[in-house]
Image (cartoon, rainbow, N blue to C red; front, side):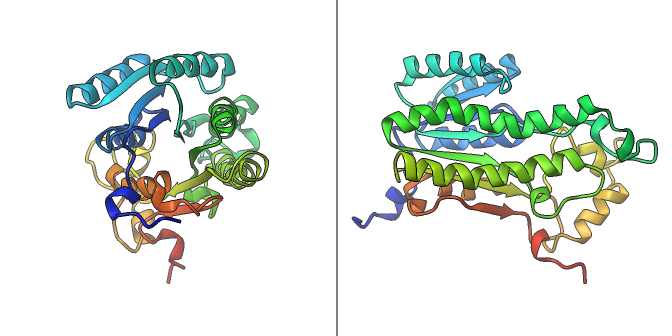
Length: 277
């Protein structure tokens, strides 16, 4: 392999990236970073206005982006978005699967036993996180298979490795995402091209709009009991911020990791290494 300069190892200039859930807290930061690194970014989100607003902000800074509405659980919606992206940018080099989340009705509590969680709530969480990763891979992964190159990055979770209390469906679904990541990495390399790589990141505890008031008090901003427990089990002593993911995703998406596929990288402040004592 030809030796590269460091700047070339992480070069994304001329690439086209599709970011699913691209207007969310974590993925909006990724979208902006990819644009900063020279990629054209297609921001797909169920919230079309948010996707378009973020794309406009990126373009105002000199970047290349489009914002599109897409439903990750509707394959025709994904195919329609793919056609627009193909027309606009001509190809897809990068796919980030960032759609996901939990649902209050699928969370155990003093008032909700696991045995009483509604089936539809469990299915909602499982579909969004696991099927919402698989279906985009069918659509955009097919484009990569046809062109014999590309990088897929899935968003798993530390819950996949060490399931947390209360969120059974979310933990199981993210474990499925990790397993599917490894399966797809092997499939793409063996059946199509070693130039197609599939990896995942497993974020630890990041404050998002979904978990903010589970981990911090809405009125005071102080940590809840659950938030305090998490911080006490995170050696770095803080929650993650979106920027903490950027170095890892840049490595996994760029030529710097050209011999890396089928791995799940924890970005968790040491949570997975700490035994509690």
